Image (cartoon, rainbow, N blue to C red; front, side):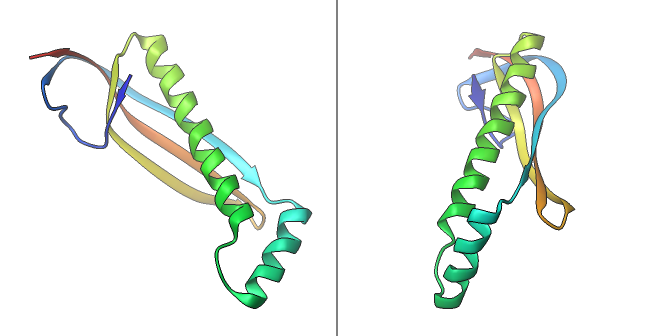
Length: 106
């Protein structure tokens, strides 16, 4: 599966556009990570626990989008974008979306 934020894929042409595909996940913080984050906030630096949590959320959302595209018969997803929104004080949604397409080499 080719996944790109671009509208076109070098060396390929889009033969069929199958439509919008998306994947999302909602993640909540937990008390263990919050305690470590507060301590890290006192001394500064990257809050690695949150970085890891968000990276895992992005991967899960991508996996869900890819599964939806494969279900449509796509072999590529173009114009991929990520979106993050807050659901409540301790939870965020990660969404990824793009155009499911069938491409072939030029």
